[in-house]
Length: 264
Image (cartoon, rainbow, N blue to C red):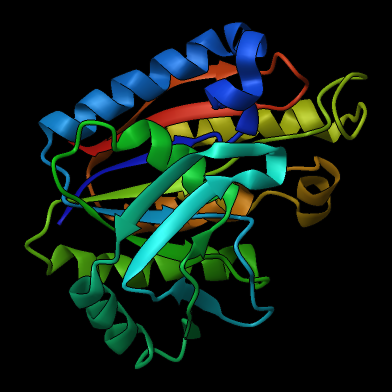
C-alpha cells in the first residue's frame, strides 16, 4: 500500500564530498531531507519506488530498471567515495509489469542495469540511512504527454494498493534552472512562474492544474522535475491525501522543492 510520497531535489551539492562549504546554503533542504527520512523510518517503509528524470527514457513508453541489486555513485561529479547499494523489490516489480503490460494506455518496458544515476543516488543516500531493510524499484518517465504521465501514476496506484508492503513513492525532481541571471540556464520569465505554479498546485493536490500547464512554458522553464511529479501525483489520484511543503530554496539559481504527501 502507498504509505507516503515525496518530491525531493537531487543536486549533487547536497553530498558532503561535493558540496562541502556550499552545503551551508542548502540548510533548509538538508533539514527537510532529515524530516522526511524520519517520517519514512517511523512509517516502516519497506519499498521505495524512485522516479528519476535522468534515467534513460523511451519516447513512447515508461520503463523500470530490473536488476537483483543496484549501485549508486557520484563518480560523474568527481566523488569516488560515496556509494549506496540497494536490492530490487523483484516481486512487486513483477506485479507492476504484469498489470501495466496489459494496459494499452500505459506503454511499459523493462531495462536492466545495476548502475543508478545521481537523481536516484542522492535520495537514496539521504532517505535510507536508518531503514533496517528496504528494497527499491527505479522508474523512468517517457517523452509522452503530461496526461500520459499522470495516467501512468493512476495505473501504478492500482497495483500498489493491492500490495501488503509499506511503499514510499519518491519523485526526484529539481524545478526551474532559469530562475535568475546566476541560474545555470540564465534568467527567464517562465522559470519563477513554473516554480510558483508547481508549489501551489502540489500543495493543493491539484493534479488537473499541473496537467494543464502550458507545454512550451514548461520547456522554457528549464526544469527536470515536471514529469516525475506528474507520475507521483497520479499515484494519489482519488486518494484523500495532504501535501506538506517541507522546504523550498534556490541558493544557486535552481529551484529545490521538498514536499511530503501522506494519505489523510
